[in-house]
Image (cartoon, rainbow over all chains, first blue to last red):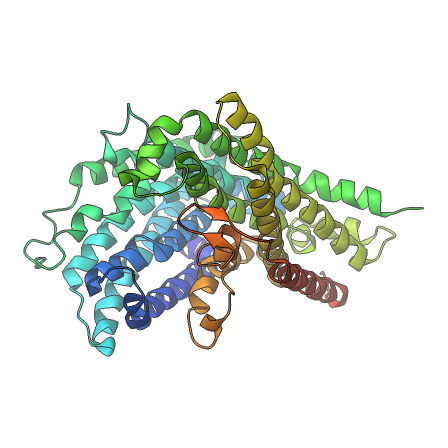
Length: 248
Length: 255
């Protein structure tokens, strides 16, 4: 029942997000000839896909959509006068937060997987090929970092009142993270730059050699483990705040 | 009695938090960008292939074509959200609609205040970069900043109007936000298709000058007169979208 409730609350957002991501990936593939012809230097198809999808517009869209998926929750329901109905359900507040987080994380993972499903399928239409394994590597990066962004927005949704403040705080958090990671004391820890990790520049180098067997070898597992830990901590903190809070 | 002032105050009370956070973030990037340029310049402009004044190129890459501009677009759209649909969800719409003013006036006040906020955010880099650059004994041409401010205001007005229309159309505030975000990224890709690609329709490029005749990529400076026709077109589009939002609000049932 709780899963269904969470799905109903975020279903429209998720559907629009999925449709938008698919459309953007399709446009990137279909326009490849024109963009590559007008490029300053000749670029290969995998490099083009990386710069158009995994490094630029589509990644920006993915990040914004993950932020939107993280919005909502009991604090926002209070403003609408429906928090009482949710809190009177025969389930603990921890469970409410956990199910909401799990639904969101699943949605983020599915969104991250969409480019990996569409791009290899659509590439032959324009006379090119793109390895599914290579696309899957980027999906793992997107899913791992996306869950941190989702957890951060979920946390801000529990702490900050208002429908849009958590979105602003998340954007600000990401920017701060990005800028701070460029400063000298932190510049030697690339994992701290979430967006840079999602770019997956190190994966681009070995685009052609990717096989299913070597699929997971070049991924930054330490960074992904760190992200999972941060995401779990943020979700835990959000759960603790919801559990201890009065919602008058 | 002038009813606009109380309506503007109401709109200000509803959006001031978002506006102040937006201004603070934009200010932080500008100030931080100038005073931490030593570290950031190596990351933002690596290789030293840029031919013009490095500081001009750096500020352009960070503020007028980079992080600050992206943030400005997102914040401008967040400023436009809210309004009667959101009040409907919070069950306060009855109080607002019971005010002795027309719905058109209500939305007009929201739009007017929003455009003033967009203008303020557009001018903010000009003020801060002038002060911070002089404190750091550097110089970024004020005329350039003024011209970029104009471009930001016109582009920001369009994004604001799109978000206002989305907030009017969609009942769920998160759906409106999703649609608005999708529009920001979707639209520049849509204009790559023929026959749209023949015209300068990408507002992101218009705002930053990228691939525009009025921008010299080698010096990262705007050249010649501001593109008045483009600016007028964008403001006209923004006005038309706000007009549509007003018409929809006038005819809608808020139950």
